Image: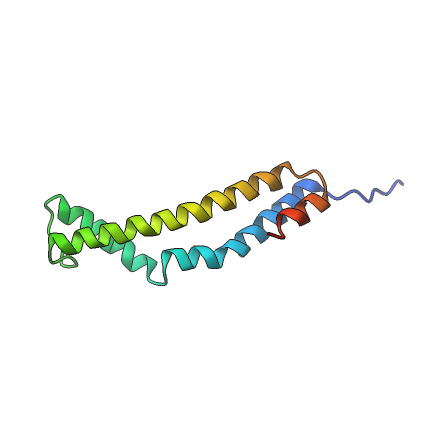
Length: 107
């Protein structure tokens, strides 16, 4: 029986993607904030309010506009992080060796 010391790169890439996601998790949480679910509902309510639908969460057009502006800022921060994460995932998917994978995960 012949033994091979070659790593299964598909498996290793999969593990590397999970590790990459774990490394980005804190940055993503920081970008969306600790009350992300609440802010998502308030954002939807603000959009609805600006389109003529009343909401008990939104008291004025100024408040709705402020919530929409904050959400836009959060999306911009998140977009930068996601672009970086996706670029690294692409490099992981193209990695041919374990050395390449290790290099991509040491950013």
